[in-house]
Image (cartoon, rainbow, N blue to C red):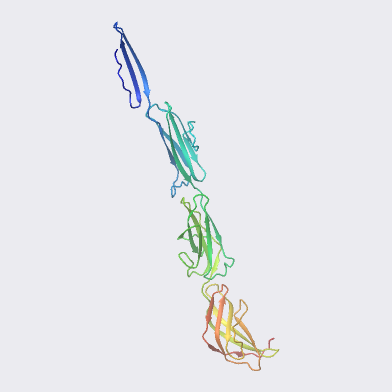
Length: 337
């Protein structure tokens, strides 16, 4: 009995088996058979095309393509889907047109021998610019240096990376230079980088948000603030005394002042240390620089000794002078109440 040869192919490919048999009578029989061997699984990969921002975020629509390969029996079926369950519907492309913080696409492939392979690709898309809002103090038209406007930035998908902000005298022309602050909120006023500094008058805060995908919102201006961190300039005073019809005298002390910020003083106070004047400061009504002081007695002193003068502008910025001065007072004969 003859023994047939043994052995088998170890790589994928097409093989032929030839068999020749001879019986004892010398008869010869020949047969041949073709066999295809596939021992390798098919492979696939997914490619994505779109505008890539920062931190691997796409900032535009994303098109996806399934790429397949097989070195053996050839591709029989494939699919590109967001399902983690294998399917073979011969769909090789997909697109993402809405924002997502993360989604995985799966590729499935099957060859003619029934072997299968799979691949996957995770993407994230944010094509929406952040939103910026302002929190403005109600006293925005009477500002001193203790105030600030708060910029709030939000982004629904990738989140806020930074806030760009700058002050300007215009609410229509965007500033050329912005300052950057990390986080979702920034309270900016007179101090620090990007603050108002010495720029007094009507000012507008411009701000824009930057998200983690690199999207930047259009800069918009806040409501205006009237900023005045300097007190008025106090240059002197005058004094007139009037007889009162009820007895005694009325002294009207007018402080002379100017203001480079909001333009006018809002309040004045003086302290006169001459008897019989009160020993505490007397102040004018808001918006006036005329301090009225009533005294009793039959004589009206002149000059008077003033130890403290104060003038305050409409924003509350105050200038105080504590130098003692001797002030002559003009005596009027016109009686007052």
